[in-house]
Every structure is written in structure tokens, then in C-alpha cells.
Length: 338
Length: 262
Ligand SMILES: Nc1ncnc2c1ncn2[C@@H]1O[C@H](COP(=O)(O)OP(=O)(O)O)[C@@H](O)[C@H]1O
Ligand SMILES: [Mg+2]
Image (cartoon, rainbow over all chains, first blue to last red):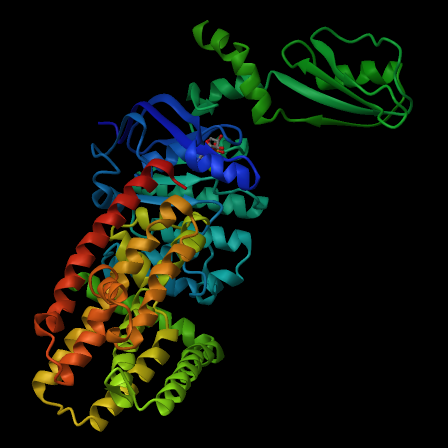
């Protein structure tokens, strides 16, 4: 049985807009201008126990809104959500016992309490068996390197330390489902790696189901076999990450900083084209995109440098928004149907 | 129930650990309310030394009224001060969500989250006033009277909490509920004096609509042998009704929040 089921899940935020000033306030009072924002638009998917799913999309795509409906914080405007067969909002308390939640940008812990005190309190709220709690505390301390953090109040922690603390707190009751909303935002690579390792371990040892939202593709590549991509509230892709990787890996961008503005036409290898070209002396950037299946970075770089004098150049990984754009242009459709 | 009492104890212990860490703040907070109280008491003293009796109420009788409302207020202050900051501290920052993903009652979590030590000062002042006044007035400390006082103070505290819960819940709609809360809360200032000195409408308001008077004026009347009938016993009943009503309002607010998430 699927552990998470959504069926046409939809959320519309209804807000009232107010013009500035007193006049605006008076107007808003008598004739409120209602603005509806469709944040999540008829999303359906199933997640099986033990899956780790990356839920990705650019800022404002509707990731957090979805998570809030899955966790029971928000009620869907229409559609269905079932977690372990329950309605997470109606059966809030039963659901809460089985889930763990981390919101990357805010703390679940008590600001002024030492981490160990926060954990003790949380263990009691979730009625974790004391002996089991001790065991888990040791385990978590090791994998998340909590050691000296246990005695430290949250307010004194760095971002990375805080996130490790959050994860420990969210998983100390061994939830069946864990929702991580942007857990690695703003963290350095070493901390990211440690956090990913911890999540992997929980998933491997306990079969914890993990939903991970992010706009960092690195997290997904490291942890998830399956990704769901949403854009503007719509589900635009649900499938294995391998397909995405093969596809978005197809296009790369190279940026050249040229010594002189480039006015002449440049002959390029097949599969490469110019994205932007700064013609002014101040902005001498030349950006090219090429299809990796047709040519190579060194080919493109070689050809360009043959014709133009270049100060510097760099190869950029495509970001999420360019992948989303490509999916819209049918890039994945060809792949999956062929 | 036992589980919640247990948890409240744990929250309280943690809270005191934090307070002990900021020992100076703790002392300032707890004593600042005492200083505030002393200045309002001076006002009463000045007024009462000009006129020996206020509408038939002697100085110590007025102190008894004042002490009773102070005690009731201190209960709200100690145990439910967090209601003031639902909007600013919890909804705006998004940390209200954490109450909703935990397997305990969100209102309990909100209240238990911060025992407010500043209320201890009020509690001490109120106790001193009531003890002094009853002694001076030769009100015997019979079991009946003591139980009556405890019941009235607790009921008064619950009336404060229920009213603040009703007005505080508006934070789900307007974010900053403090101005609205203040308007209703400040009516308790009338209940520091005999209601009989005000126009009739004020007395009715403070008895039936914003019934702080039930926790001060009426119990004091009862203890000083002014027969006012059954209203002297009204506080516990009104407190319970108000609490039930307030909890419905709160649940309505929660429902609204689940629709908007902000
Ligand atoms: N409480 C809210 N009220 C009104 N609009 C909101 C609210 N929360 C989010 N939105 C809007 O809904 C859309 C989706 O937001 P969100 O789910 O937070 O996206 P993401 O997490 O993917 O960045 C955005 O356009 C955002 O501005
Ligand atoms: Mg988000």
C-alpha cells in the first residue's frame, strides 16, 4: 500500500489586496479586493514505503505548500491527501506521531534551551521509550556529530549546527515518513554531505520514507532515485532521476570573457549556438550553449579561441530553471515516450 | 490529563532553567511588576487619604478589591502570557506550524511554551494585599472563606485567560491582535475599584459582558458582608462558560489558519 497518496491535490490561497494609504484601508474594509493564488494545482502522486523522493521546483513553485498539506498544517482547497491511509488534518494527532518535519528556514527547537534539553522534551512529547531514546541519542550523536552541540543552546549555533540539531529532533521518535523542506539551504558542502549521509542511513536501516524538497539538484542526485518536478503549482515530471540527468546533461553553457568586444560572426561547431553576446567594451561576455551529444566543451572552446582572443572562460552546470524550461519545451517527453 | 500535567511540569522546569541562566532578567522581570504595582497603590493611598470612604468602601475594603483582581490577573500573566504574542512571535515567523505537527494539543503547547515569570511579582503583590486587607478588616480565615477566596481567584484567572484567548485568536486574521486585546484587557482597571462608584452601564458591562468584576467587586462584597445574592458565586460558572466559548473561538481560528497558512 502506498504510504503517501495525493489525488488532484489543490491549494488556492485567498488573500485580500489593499491599496496603500488610508484610502486604501477604507476601500479594503468595504470592498475587499480578493486575489486568488493557485499555489498547488491538481497534483497526484503515490509514494511507497521506503522511497526517497525529491520534490523539486524553483522558488514559489508550490513545494512548501504541498508539504504543509501532506503534514496536515494546511487543508487542501480540493483534492485528496492520505498519509498511511489517514487524513493528515482531520486525524492530526495520529498523523503527527508518525511523521517528522524539518523546515529549513526555521527552528523546531527552543531557542534558549541546550539541544539535549530540547531533545529530552521532544522525546517526552512523542512518548519515546526511555531506553530506546538513549540508544537513538548515541546513534544520532555519532552520525550527526552532535557531541559538543548537545550542551549548546540553539541560539548559539551556526546554520550547519542548527540543521544537524533539527534533524536529530525531527527523527528522534523514529517517524515512518519524514518531510524535509529545503534542509540544506545555505549550508556548506561538508555539512551537506553529513546530513545526506544521515538521511541515507535512516532510510536504509529503518525504511524511513523521505520527501525532500529543494532547489539544489545536488541533494537529489545524492539521495533520490525518483524526482517530482513542479512548476507554477503543476506537476510537470514524475519519474526516475536518471532520465533527468541524461536529459538536462544534454545542454551546457560556456561563458567567455573576451579581450575585445566581439562584433564579427563566429563559426561554431554543430550543436552550439550563441545565447548572449555583450557588444560594449564594458561587457565583453560571450555565452554559448551546446548540445553535449553533438559536440564537446573542448571543441567549442577551441573553435571560439581560434577566432577571438579570450581572457577567461567557465563552464556552468545548468540550473533548475533551465531544466524546467527544457521540460516545457518537450525535452523529457521525447525521451520518455521514445 | 495526567500526561498533560506531566508535560507541563517538564516545560516549566525547562523554562526555569532558561530563567536561571538569565538570572538578572528574571529578577528585573519579577520585580518590575512589583514596582508598577507600588505606584498604582500609591495612587489609591493618595485618593483614599483625601476621602475616608469611597462610596461606602473603606481604604482596606478597596485594597481587598484591588488585591483580588491583581491575583486573578497574575494567574493569566504567569500561565497564559503567550496569548499576547500569537501573531507576532508564532504566526508571522511561521513557528506556529511546529505546534501543528506535534501530537499534543496546540493550545496547550502554546501556553506551556512560556511560563511568564513577570507574573510572579503580581502574584506576590496581590497576595500581600489580600492578606493585609482581610486582617485589617477582621475577616476570619475560616476554611470556608479561604476556599471561597481560592475559588474566586482561580475563576478570575480563567476569566482573564478566556477573554484574552477570544481576543488573541483574532491574530489568525489580523496578525497583530495586541491592540484589540488591550482594549478588552484594560477594562479590568475598572474592576480594581468598587463597581458601585461607576455609572450603571459600566457596572453591568463589568458583570455580564467583560466580567472582571465577578472576580473582585462581588467576592469582596461577599467577604465584607454586603449581601449581593448569588452573583457573589457567579465567577466560577461564568469562567467555565467563557472558557468553553473561548475554546470554540480558538478552534475556529485554527480552522481559518489551516485554510490560509499565514
Ligand atoms: N500563506 C500564503 N498566502 C498567500 N500566498 C502564499 C502563501 N504561501 C505561499 N504563497 C504563494 O504560493 C506560491 C507557492 O509558494 P510555496 O509553496 O511557498 O513555494 P516554494 O516552497 O516552492 O518556494 C507562491 O507564489 C507564494 O507566493
Ligand atoms: Mg518553500
